[in-house]
Picture 1 (spheres, rainbow, N blue to C red):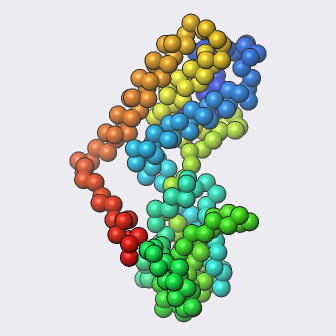
Picture 2: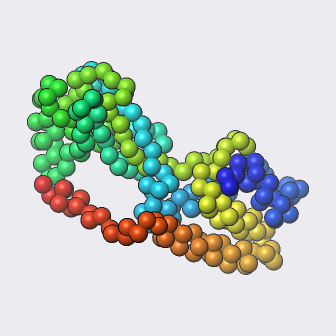
Length: 232
């Protein structure tokens, strides 16, 4: 079941009998909830299950002769899964320029400007503009749909009561995380030790769920070839 922020707050307050306790203010409880979501999110990333939960895509709005494009605002740690070009029968992956000579390669491609050349890209972290995707050669077309970025997004942080937690399988973990934080705040609370133990048990269960979640019988690991790509 997917919980809204309002439902999460009510559930936590009821289970900790803190509905009328003024020492836990609404904004503080929301911060606990979002911290719990980030904690669960970290486990999902650590176990490599981002594609199951946080895979997203966004069309890149190309403008003729433009080189630099902002990444999606909700991208997690610049994790781009793929950049794909598709225009009619012409479909290919826009490859990231890699290797020890990548800047020379980028310059070489940058001098090309005809539609017969495949795009490539680099990532640039500029203080003024943030992290951007540099298209090489600069776009030779204006299009809102020809280039799609597949990427890993952040888990949603909840701010409004109607916002929905987007990791519903681990709501119990988020709730227990908040209960522990509440009991921790009240020094000597008798429920604190049990809350620590229960959170650890839910964390173990969450990790097991993430480890076993792929049930199609395909348990082969994809070989990491990034070392060879970097070396070329």
